[in-house]
Length: 453
Image (cartoon, rainbow, N blue to C red; front, side, top):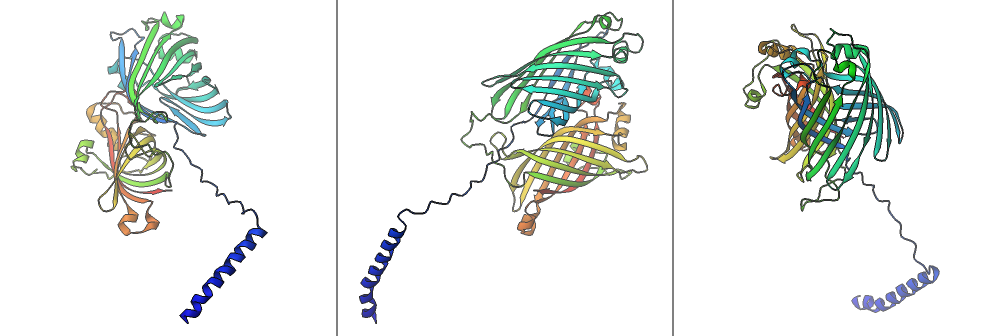
């Protein structure tokens, strides 16, 4: 049988060769290769940033003090629906490539001596409408706003953006139209009738790239009060100078690399999340909580919250740190010492993942928190310290969570995290008039589930 198979091999090879030759004669050209569509790469956005710094402002009023300082946390972000630019923000009602009509808010500074700022709390975020025209390096803004008592004012502003190397510089000029009610209250102090007027200020903002994601931030400006305001007995200075210096974290420029490890920019699955939490108030301060020395709130005040997160980057300073923009809302439940209270938060949160068997993550967030009314746990502490409470405060969030899929060895739960967090509001130790010059705040310990998608 072996001999027969061996004798058939030459004949089989001959048949196969003839078949191939016939196929080549029938198809002189091979069929074109099928090209598979390449999966498009979605890059991380480059329109985000977070910073902190100190603002110095001249006091225009007839007081012994001439200047005042503020600590300001800043967030920068922009997408197709809204933008946040430091101390101003807007949601688009309508927009195209060059024109925008926005619901608009920006912070209005009232520079008075530090010891008076907690009691007056006269500066705040005002709201109104804004028209913006953007073309190339130029942008022009026109806005109409009012404070919480309907004292109206407006401004027109022109800015130009110049970039070269590590520098980004933006000179600006602004005219301000102020109503009679506005001037009578903020400059006449409700004792003198001033009437409406037009003020002017101009200056320059600058950003310098140091290395990786680190930038230095600066601003210098000067404002001029109109004659009717300057001649008031309450006013001492016609010109007000302001400056700002700080640092921030922004996307690293693509043209430069500062590490042998390239920054990963391609988006991955799970770049958005929803976090649902429930928390319990504690009268303990943040240091005590971090040392696991917490006290129980005798009134058992509780809150629930929901946060959305969208990822900004998966690398900070070339380290595997995930950064998210995370707005959220919280509901503080009524108790025997307080009514229902709503809270709104906007923050940037960083996560660092490590493994101890299952995957764990440490998280830290920085942002702003605004409440519809001050909670009992916060108000009672400020009463003891003699502060007038502020609805707007700095927001911090500290968290530790574990991957649920790793615990149960389930791929279906790989995007689910179970965690513990500290929900913290405070005034940054009296250093910021934006937060009412208070020291103290409130803390809630919470548990949460976070689902990435």
